[in-house]
Image (tube, rainbow, N blue to C red):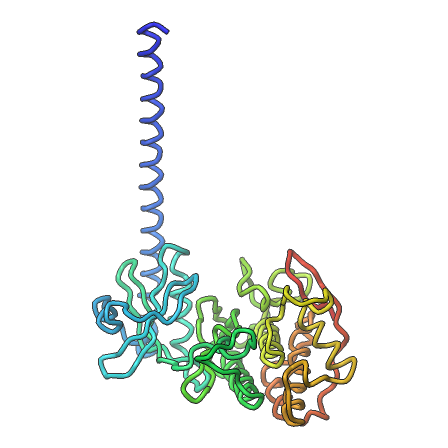
Length: 372
């Protein structure tokens, strides 16, 4: 290749690289501008909420306050897609849990949902939001500290380690009742109905006396108490606990009954001591937990040793929780009880509980549900 050809080739390469660099810079600034505008919109929405709700709003902290509380984020309690939770100490000396949100994901709507929804609540079974921090992209939520962490640490027998124990049947029953009361309050006790959309063991926190409190309102949706069906642009929840109507509108409308479904899945796990989908079991028919437990509890005599139950009282308590759970996960939302009815069923006699319909599988969009 002659010198002119080499110069032409080099010119083309330099031009291509320059174009690539220019395109990358343009894309970077466009993304930065978009993210900034989204955060500004989120900030504006939250500032509007704070201004409109006055005394409902929790205390506002600076980011410096948050760093002081957590001793520069020294002790991490947990981590998730939302960010990380750190143990801290409030100015009054009480321990707190500080959730520092991951601002690289989403548009800040989870933060708004959490502050807007939980600020409206006041119930013994709902975690208390003590304050928040909003400084540009620095966002944090300050909660009361729950010394025993989340429920999931205590219910799966395979996960129990030396530093924790499996809760007794009686303790699990109290957690089930307390969680049900918290959900009933969200659905009926507030001026504005709150749908949680992410009820699962991870989001049920336990204090020093194992009193349960519902936490993590990042996916919550507010609606008037008169609304029975709510509109949703996208599915919300965690695989294994999401009600079928959230994915398939042909099943039924999305409503507070979607929380009932998630609650039902959770108490089935609590009674059985295992996750609702277990790929490690030996028989294919036992993989889907609700179907497996229905066969043992409803279709035949319950075998206490399968659930590690020792006394008649433990067996009856577990059976009650399982029957209520199976009613809660009926595919048609209309067939599920309200949380008020769930509490009545749990507190009533076992003999008065009717047997739920037989369960069959429903496979939809790579998720498995029962079809009753």
